[in-house]
Amino acid sequence: MAEDTPEAEQKSATEHKPVYYGDYLRLGQLLSCQHPESERLGRPAHDEMLFITVHQAYELWFKQIIHELGSVQAAFAGPVLDDRALTPVVRSLDRVREILRLLIQQIDVLETMTPLDFLDFRDLLYPASGFQSWQFRLIEIRLGLRAGQRVSYDGKGFNERLNAEDRARLTKAEAEPKLIEQLDAWLRRTPFLSHEGWTFEEVYRDAVRGQLEADAAQLAANRTLAESQREAQLKRLERELARFDALFDEASYEALRREGQWHMSRQALQAALLITLYRDEPACQQPFRLLSLLMDIDEEMTSWRNRHALMVQRMIGSRIGTGGSSGHDYLRAAADEHQVFGDLFALSTFLIARSTLPPLPKALRRAMGFSYEDAPDAA
Ligand code: HEM
Image (cartoon, rainbow, N blue to C red; front, side, top):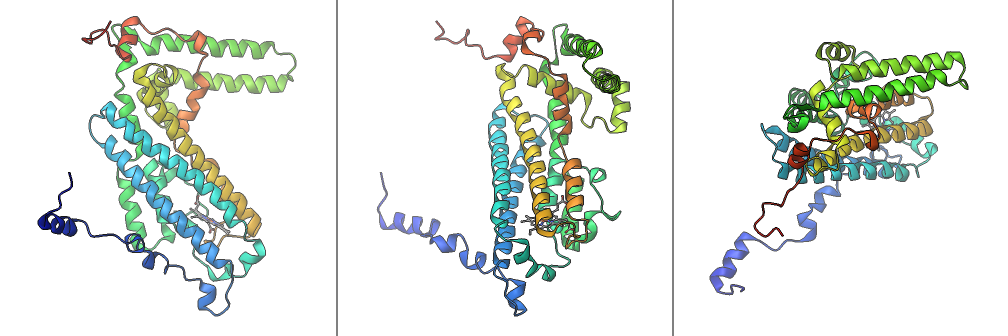
């Protein structure tokens, strides 16, 4: 029932003042942040407003992504992640993926500006560049892009092009846990890799080895391929087999890891395989969603990089960027190299058809499921 005494009215008025739309959103401040350089210099270029608006909209969305990643990382920060906490984690990652999709679409709006329109004000932007977006770098770092993995275009890091304040923020972020590391630690704690004498490692290794060897035999017998093609493909298969075997042997795994062929830990990747293969078991359903979302996010980031690179090629051809890079060439290389969850993608090579999947022991299936048999009302 509503309280309507004068005291109660006064109390609610001090706790919650009526809010006005424009004040709540600080529209006065927000809408006074668009200052085209071309106007300031007395040679107004109509499209610079679009250029500023699109960039600012990006930065707002980057802020939201960082906010979501913050809560995901906080959930992963403790020694244990309660399964119930996975629901908000999955929801935040889902949101990040959708925002990234939106960011790719925004390029269409920017492309209503033609290269000639852009030239009306491009010279006024030097040496500023999206390359200096600290929020974009923070997202990359938080996800787990390694400093040594970055494509460099002048032998220097991107940090060199940032002011002291932005550089300090990112240096701090580099020292903090990355989502990929937290994921690795969480996967390593997966309880179902062994159960009462049964080990995932043993049964799965045999099943996949059999599959990869059958692929090799099929390839060797394929007379439609030229000898050189067949040999090249067989070599690739052998490499994959070695990569797979290493997942079950610490010493060879570490050797491949040092070569950069794997990045996550062996135990974490085994757990990711188990979750992917047995994703229908209730205990694996949310973890599977989580892994899929991380791959989606990686994929959307790559799609954005590719889409941005294409737009840049369309806008400036093969000119160098305002930030000084080779422009399109640098951006394409970054799109190829800046994948974070590549190990999860690589696992697909080692999946086998569900029909050939080794069955889980009964007790383990029970442990991975929801059982209502002991519930008082069970029929
Ligand atoms: C006319 C439109 C645009 C052009 C011609 C353009 C051009 C470029 C170029 C040439 C680079 C490479 C660095 C350099 O030499 O400057 C770059 C990097 C970048 N730009 Fe853009 N850009 C445009 C729009 C945008 C928009 C709307 C965003 C959204 C925030 C953005 C974000 C970025 C980011 C984050 C990078 C760094 C990418 C990386 O290092 O992987 N750009 N841009």
